[in-house]
Image (tube, rainbow, N blue to C red; front, top):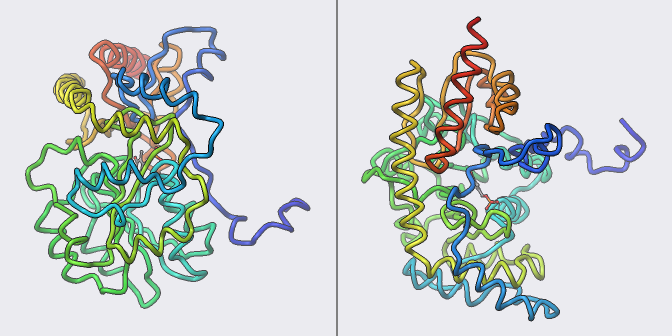
Length: 369
Ligand SMILES: *Cc1c(COP(=O)(O)O)cnc(C)c1O
């Protein structure tokens, strides 16, 4: 322990660090290459709507003024789309920030927080910061296990982070199982449905979690502009809940969480539904291509409801990741989720998908020699 560590809040000492997808810039500098393909962070392969860029340019001249702290215009627009009141929505600096706010607002030292394992990492980090007790429930068939989560509930359970579709596996828990789950979750537990990939879901049996908000349950629904809207670099995410819960969460919101350019961009992004449609179409085409390519290679994957695919490559994923970098392709090795032979690959443009598959074939061949 360093001198500085002795000064730290003790809950932060054993904290797991977030491991992000490797940035393009880092790899291009390291290997002296250009045009790397990054399929490691589930970013939008169609990049960003031109209408968003226009909106940012228009707003730029106002950046000497503080933004409105609670993103009122954006909340109004979201509320109209979702059929709720603006007072039921809290907007933060990315979904990740909202996850932190939820822990700030609700997790007391010693409270249990239940998560799937593997699932999105920042639940664990933010729980640790608050001194909460993380309870991991293993996935079943690469899917969150609602019955297992119910069995893990104790008197101290405060929050349940239910990532649906789940990251990194891309699978969903369907409507009927969520209904049965919600019937048995004690009223005092808060269920956070993390729906970062909600727009990509094709399965008609995907639950409508808004029904639990409407029913006044202790539920937050988390959404983001980072994925289908292509605003990962601007940081805008939000949650929807009852007015009462939203108000409680609002108390821990910083004064100016979302900057002016981001608010303007998110509003413009919402209006450009043609961009969303193009994104979804590209995703469907890419998914079919990648399924076919993995099938040919004899690799097992989880059928995805997202813009990424979780695939078992039957060799050390860390080695494959490193070797694929030499071909200018960045993917996500899943050793950090204790799945040491699996990769999580974002569905890219067709050119990107092909480049990734070519690199993967080279790396698998090398490994078999
Ligand atoms: C991407 C993602 C988020 C939110 O990401 P932000 O960029 O912080 O908005 C939340 N949950 C999951 C599961 C994600 O994959």
